[in-house]
Length: 184
Ligand code: IMP
Image (tube, rainbow, N blue to C red; front, side, top):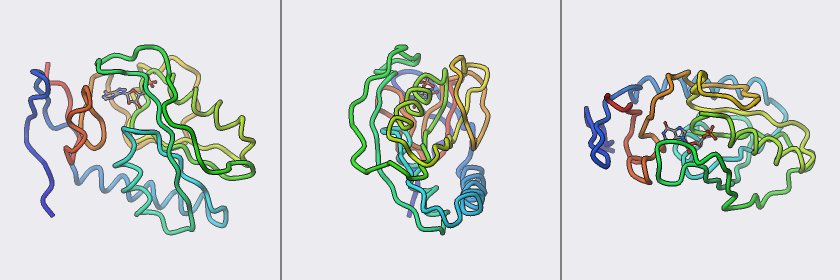
């Protein structure tokens, strides 16, 4: 299998450079999988991926987990086609699974201001699950202004726009196999 791994990317006229390599992502995702195996042993959790950005991280994460588990998806939009959040969360796809009494693991590609994750955690709690945990591949810690719980983090990153491994800029760049950062 050949992955898309350029050194730099021109996306909509902006230049991005490699920030987190494929190998670094793989090592971290494997470690996160081991942690989840331990923490959710005997609990059969349900992963809820937040579309679109989390689809690649979730796919890799689940293949690093060996306990019985399920998956479902919810779709939110807060960025539109811009590099900054619109400040409003729009729900574009609801959950199909029944979550009452379940151990829910929300899977996000990136937590920036924390608005989307706060919305999701509150939303999940309304289904009366047994527990709600949050895992995000990336966290822009200095940008997070909403009071949001994050239980597992792949990488803490600076407050800069990143691209690849599921993350987009105006829907482009999700197919990059590693993470790129705006080169300013
Ligand atoms: P928040 O609600 O401000 O925390 O933003 C979370 C959502 O914004 C993520 O699920 C992404 O879809 C998007 N996002 C935030 N930062 C970036 C970035 O640097 N690149 C691409 N998407 C981002």
